[in-house]
Length: 253
Image 1: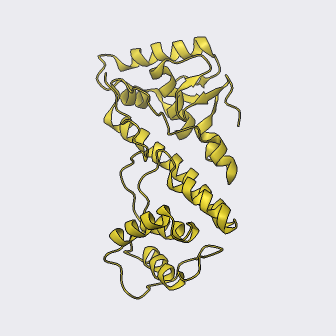
Image 2: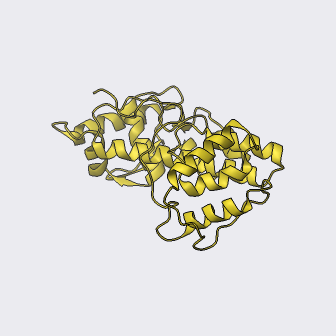
């Protein structure tokens, strides 16, 4: 995926070529991932405390269109006209996802005086994109021989910007780690903590990875079944946090 001047960069940074005006770019970011949006909605998200939010939006829109007339189209409903690295990432699969992931969504970007709703949206998108990278790394690992699988397991575990792994994901990860490795011990410990209330007998069926480390079949079957069963620990989301302690998306006004 090209990260050229015509592409809106949101992974690990925020810019469109040499253009870096944050509020103008956030308009483009939102419609690139959510689709066309009314001006009123965008003004409320990005200028919640402005005396005249529509005027602020008009100024930001003018600045962006001066730089690239086709980047943001429409009048009453604005729509994206530039390629976006985050939107493209979600269409990729396998190793291509890892190559395209330059860092957490809007990492290090100051979000000046935006609404709480927009801040929550940024965190949700950051987690969504990182989880996609994580899931594809696990898919590569599950289709690889043990040595290569362990490398991709480490990558999946360390995706920057990813929320904490749920029990179902940890159960996928465990058989991909090398026996006796630090990662295996870490995953076992986390699973033990998260599944402390898991039933002793499996309640359902879980799909095992393509290749499994010897001696773990019964343990993994029970964990996978518990995570997949209704009321198990595999569902639901957690608040996003960066594994590498990236700063919070909130910035000073």
